[in-house]
Image (tube, rainbow, N blue to C red; front, side, top):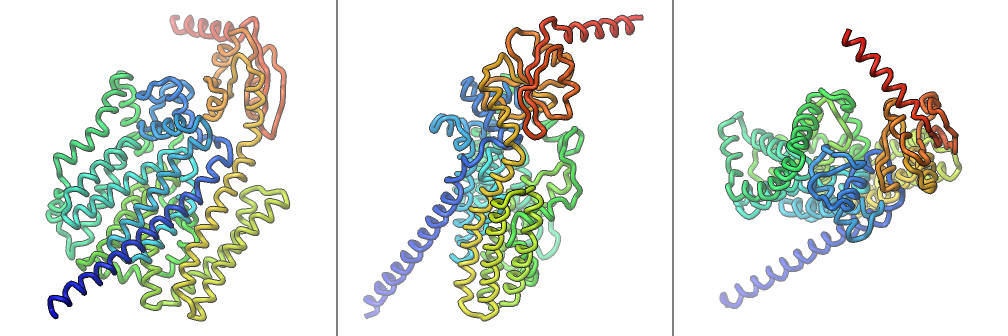
Length: 576
C-alpha cells in the first residue's frame, strides 16, 4: 500500500502543479493581451508631436532612405545624441509596415508589452500570483509608462533591457544560475546599445545598494565579494559582441567625432550641467512627477508606509519575498537618487524604476488584503477619489479646453476614476468582497488609463502642434525649392517633407537659403516677423495661431552681399 500511495501523491502533486502552471500562463497571456489592446489601437492617433516624438521617427526614416545603418542623422546632419539600437528598431518597423507615425511608435509599444510580461514573470518567481498580476496591471495603468509606450523615444527600449538585465542578474545570483547571468549580460549589452553607459550604472548601482542594505551591519568587503559573483568572461564577451562592433564602426565612419560628442558632451558634460539647454530642475523635481504619473497608486502608497517599515525591519531575512522587495526598493532608490543628483532632469529618466515600484505597490496591496488591513486600503481609496475630483478643473485648465466636448470628456474620464475608487472604498468599508474589489480596481484603472492617455495625446496635439502642422502641409503641397524655419528645428518638418529643412539662425543663413532660384518658404513664429521682413521680397501666405508661413525671395542676393561687406570691414579693422 505504501508503494501505491506514493505514486498517488506524486500524481496529485503533479496535477496540482500543472493546474498552477496553466493558471500562471493564462494570467501572463491575459496581461499581454491587455497591454497590447491598450496600446496598439491608438498608436497612430496623432501625427508626429514635436520635438521628442520626431527625433527618432525622422532619424530612422533617414537611416532607411540612405541605407547607412551605422551613422545616425537628423535633418540630414550627424545625430550624436544616442546610440543606434532604437534607430534600428524603428527602421525595421518602417521596412515591415512602411513609414508612418504608427510604425515609428510600434517598437516602444512592443517593448512596453514585453516589459509588463517580464515584470509579471519576475514577480511570480518569488511571490504569489496575485502580487505578480497586480504588478503587471499597475505598470500598464501608470501614466508615464503608458505615455512613453506611445512615443518613438529610447526610454522604453532602455527600460526593457535594463530591467531584463536586473531581473536576470538577480535570478542568477539568487539561484546560482550561470545561464541567467549570461542572459543578464546580453540584456545589458542591448541597453548599452540603446542609451550608453547609464545602463551599466543603473544595473550595478542597484545591486550595490541591495547588497549593502541586506547586511545587518556595514560590510563593504562582503558587498564587493558579492558583486564579483557577476564577473564572467563569457558574459563580458557577449555584451562586447553586442555593443563594440557598432561603436567601433561609428567611430571609424565619423573619425571619432560621434564618440567624442556622445561620451564627452552628451554624457559627461550634460551630467555635470556644463551645456546649454540642460533641462535644469531642482533636486525635488521627481517627487511630484512620480506622484502624478503613478496616480492613483501613489495615493495608496502614502498610507502603506507601515507595511514598508515592516519590510525594512525584515530586510536581512533570507526569504525570497523579502529579498525581492528589498531589491525592488534598491532599484527605485538608485534611479531616483542617481538622476536627482544630476542637474539636467527630464520626467522620462524615471521610467526604469516603474516596474520595481509596481511590484512594491502590488506586494503592499497583497499584504493589506492577506493580513486584513482595511484602514490602509480605505484611506488610500478615499484620498485617490478626492484627488480625482479636484484634478478635473485643474487638468481642464492645463489643457486650455474651450469647448463643451472637451469639458464633457474630461469630466467623464475623471468621474469614472472617482466612481471606481468610491466603489472600492465602499467595499473596503463594508469589508465585503475585498479581494474582488481589489482585482476590479486594478483592472478598471488599467482600462481608464488606456482611454485617458490617448485623449490627452489628442488634446496636446491640438493645442501644441495642429497650427504648425497645417501650415507645414500647405508648404509641402506647393513643392517649393526650399522650406526653412526661423530659430526652430522641428523633426516633423523633414519627416513629412522628406528632405532637409533649414534652420535659419542668422541673416547669412537667411540669405544663403534664398541664393538659389525657385520658391522659398519660411515657417516661423509671430515674434520673428521683423527678422523675416528683412527679405527684399516677402509675402505672407497663411497664419494659424502664433505660426506664419511666408514666401521670401532675394533675387539680387543683397543679404549675402551685406553680410560679406560687414565681414570684410570687420577683417580690415582687425588687421589695423
